[in-house]
Length: 151
Image (cartoon, rainbow, N blue to C red):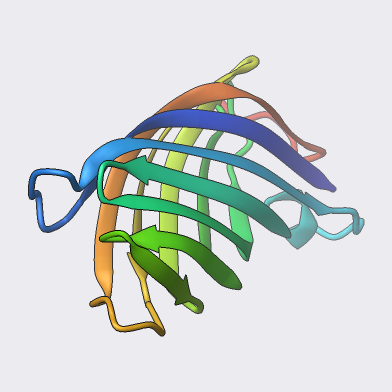
């Protein structure tokens, strides 16, 4: 069995690195694998809500992910997923997107969590698709029934 839940916020930038395309991002995520197998001690499904706010982009997205959780003193993790739906405003116009891939790596230190992420917004409206990168810090908890391994 494994479980992880966190809330994070930090800096985000478009991979175009242009004025008006950098700002703040926040996310809340939860995942759980309740099985009694060795796989469920490290790998499980989850979901998240994400927000990006820059001068030119205000967007909220939800989506599923799969997490990979290590069992060690610092509890490193990785999440891979996609957006189920993204709604917002891009360049002062309505933006709708979905199915954009995303990846995140980080580590839990007790109740503190730090991560780096990359995502690609696939927009179904007239705005071009766009990549984003960022770093976040926050609070959260990760646990696994796997035996503890030293760092």
